[in-house]
Image 1 (cartoon, rainbow, N blue to C red):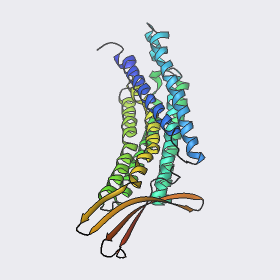
Image 2 (image 1 turned 180 degrees about the horizontal axis):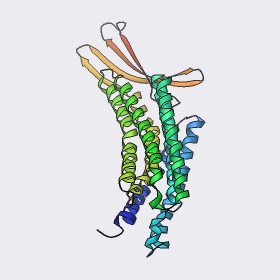
Image 3 (image 1 turned 180 degrees about the vertical axis):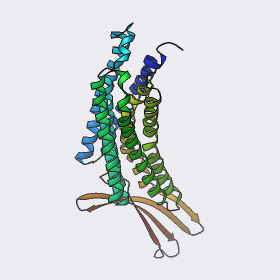
Image 4 (image 1 turned 135 degrees about the vertical axis):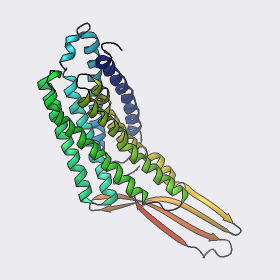
Length: 318
């Protein structure tokens, strides 16, 4: 193993992966911008803020690679002092996390209506943001890697609270959605898709956050933590954009005709539709599964059953 594998090498791996994820962010942002979603201004503002943050942070990451490999080429002593790019990374990641978690917390509220649950997510997210910004600013003041020991408690609190918020959101969404299954195959297929998205929401960000935490605490003399720290913000933005863009496919599934079973003189048709409802200034969406049984002998003999589940989005869909 070379002398700089755990300092320069791992840093470059993190920067390469960050650049790849930024490409996905750009693609998802273009999909969102070119799809006619009737989202309220606050959601569009979050998307725009995160994309600008990711763009600036990715440019900073490229500069960090240049500064490490070109500006300080053949200058190993520079590795003992962090550049301003590391504190900036902590702040940018904290911004991406709190915006994404607040958006997902809103989804939790739409589904559950539970203020205590949303309050818990809000507290965890806010504490993670505060400790993240503080750890970033403090690291920029200290600068010397050998003196980072006092930062450990703040980094632990930052990534600990941030991960706790992600896991709480994932658990709540998965639990509520799993109880919404109707027994109809295509309805449950859509719900399973939402559950999978909820799990992905917190899983990847939590893995990278915990990896960042453990490498910072257990390997303080290396840049292993930077390999996980740089991409975290892109993971949050990809999560949010994927959640928003997935509505196109879900809407197609919800508006399509459900399975039809034909037996002798009867035709059973299941179909889904969305219905908007305004409540206290908030536009809610409901998913209705309608079963119609039509017989050829008596057209009047029809039974209709409706099953309603709150839509996962508390805002307008295109």
